[in-house]
Image (cartoon, rainbow, N blue to C red; front, side, top):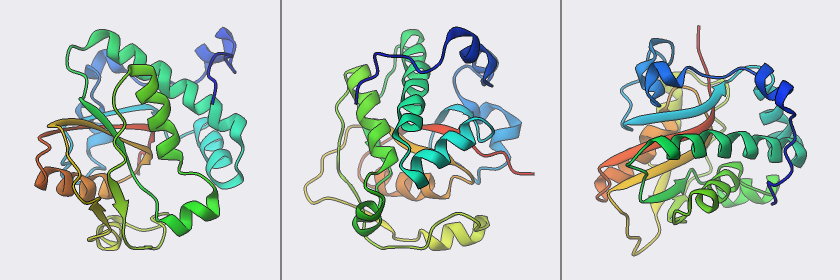
Length: 210
């Protein structure tokens, strides 16, 4: 997918909500509004384009559930812009990019895995290897509408690594939206059991719960 033609003009770009990265030093876990919703994160850093609010909520839903690829292209542009800006001010980029996998039957039904699409775009932009080593071994119910405890139970043993997978010690894990962090934490447990020591979670949006 090409990213050369911007979908938003400068005025619209300035009008959409953004997050206070100067305040939190490119780690949203430092923000109380974010950290209070994530139960004991096993990842060390969290980056996102926005809170899960309009217009990002609309764009994400259009892309995921209605295959609106113009919305997907716009979201990829926003994601790349954030991570390019982050890369310019850090000396410790991850060694590789991974993404949250979908169960094969669910991915066939949707036609794509939005986390994989985002990961491919970012890996290309930052010139980092993309490792397709994570697998979803159970077709669990969707996480939407579940509370923290239900989400954790729903994801127990949901993921595994492909045989003979080799992982570096520092990785970035890509997903589209983080709510309670249950999915990310389950994957972090698996990754840390297999030699990963530092995990950055990069997402489009962070849900702020009441």
